[in-house]
Image 1 (spheres, one colour):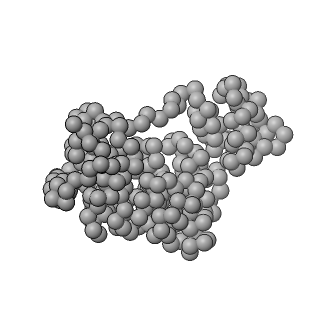
Image 2 (tube, helix red, strand yellow):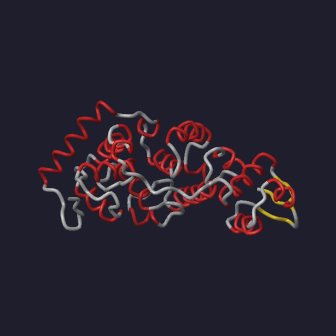
Image 3 (spheres, one colour):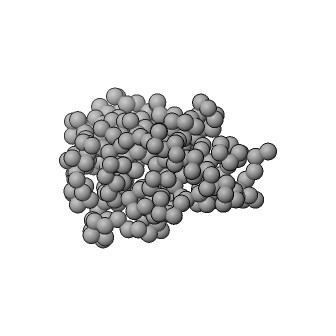
Length: 271
């Protein structure tokens, strides 16, 4: 029978056995990523935001190119929209790029380019969600906070025989009980690798929440508009609407204006 951690948390001995199993397999299944080789606060900040809802294999080359041209928070805060979106081209989710820059600007100006070690402060930054804030603290500063992505959630649910539809609140409670003191960075890397390479979806049938359909969606039209403007800088609205027809095209353009992705002068759109 599956049990929720609201009514049950494993005994310390069980947790220690679980930790030992994960760490012992880590030497065998450890993956190598640029962020792991140099887990500075800027590298972690950059890679975590770029990796949101995007496969790591697609992020790595973009991360390396981006970091080479934009090496710190100050340079990121000073990028113009066209350059920023050009460097991010191919990863979709262009709204994330602008929010990432806004957060970088706050860190550069208000915190002198030092990423705060307070999770509540991090959560006030644009596009920093609970997972991202915890990941920054764990991977950049090795602070003992629970980080839960789909791989870690799958490992915990499978290892402790819990319900597959366990809430994020319950998973986080269990994850917090399993964080070894001052081993947060290695522990979470080990858990993620174990879930990605050993306790996979095909073995456990524990899945993540599916994202909304992209094809023919408003997201796709937004992405296409921004991709076109990155390449051509400006164009007229009628031409874009013929290229990317959508029943809510006008609302999509208005949203892009409101969010400061584009500027509009009469019938001309530009970055």
